[in-house]
Length: 314
Image 1 (spheres, one colour):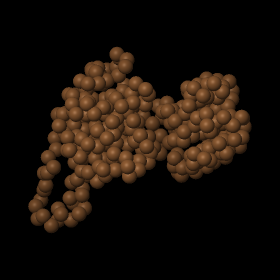
Image 2 (cartoon, one colour):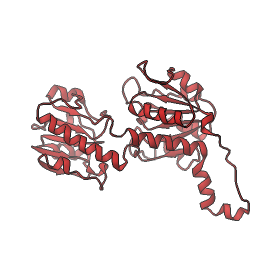
Image 3 (cartoon, helix red, strand yellow):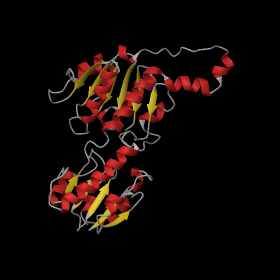
Image 4 (cartoon, helix red, strand yellow):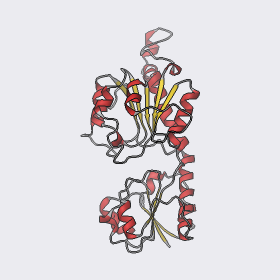
C-alpha cells in the first residue's frame, strides 16, 4: 500500500507521522499546488489531505486510489459525490480538535471583551511609563458574567464552548437543529439580535452558507462580539468588515472563505483594527490536537483495509 500525504506542512513540523508511516510506503509533500495534485496521487492507494481540494479534475486519473483521509473534521474540500461514484472511501477525524478550538474561541472572546491586546500595546509602547499615571481604564470593559453568549451549532465544539461560557457566568443560549442538550434553544434571528457574544461552530453546507447575513449583522447589539472558528463562508464577510469599520461590532476570526486571504478580501481593510482579532486558521492546531489527528488517521487507514467502517463519510 502506498500513501501520499499532500500537505504535510499544515500538520506542523513537530508532529510525529510515524503512525501513518508504519502502515506502508509513504510519500510526503510539504505542500502540493493545484497543478501538482494529479502527479502526487497518480499511483497512491491512500491520500492524506488537510486543506487541498480534491475533485473529478485531479482524481480521475488516480486509478489506484481507494481511500482519502481528511486530516480534519470538515470535508467540504472533497467532492464526495464523485468519490462515491468511483467507489473511493472518504474518512474524516471527528472530535479531535474540540478542546483546541473551544479554547481559542473563548480566548478570542475574552480578549475582545476585556481589550487585553489594547492594554498590552499601551504598556509595550512605553505610553504607560511616560504617562506618570498608575492605571488606565480606557477602553472601558465589562465583566463577561454580565453578558449573554449565543452559540451557533450544538456539536462537540459548540457544546464545549457553551459549557465554558456558562462556567464564566454567562447567560448561554444555543441555536442548533436538534432540540436537545442542556442549554436553552433559540432561533438564529433571536440569537443575533439578543446576544452580546455570538460564536459560530457549524459546518459549511448549502444551508449554512451566508447564514450570518448582512441583515442579521445589522440586527446585532451595538458592541456585540462575533467569533468565527467555523468556516469563513458561513458569514457575509464584507458585511462583517463594514460593521467592524463602523465600530458596531468586534470580530474574532480564524477562518476565511479564501485562505490565506488576499489584498482584495474584505478583511484586508480591517487589519490592525482594535476591534478585530484575526488569526491564521490555527484554532484546531494545538500540539495535542494534531497528535490525536495523526493517530486517528492511522486508525482510519488500518480499519479501511481491514474491511471495517470507521469515520466513513463515503
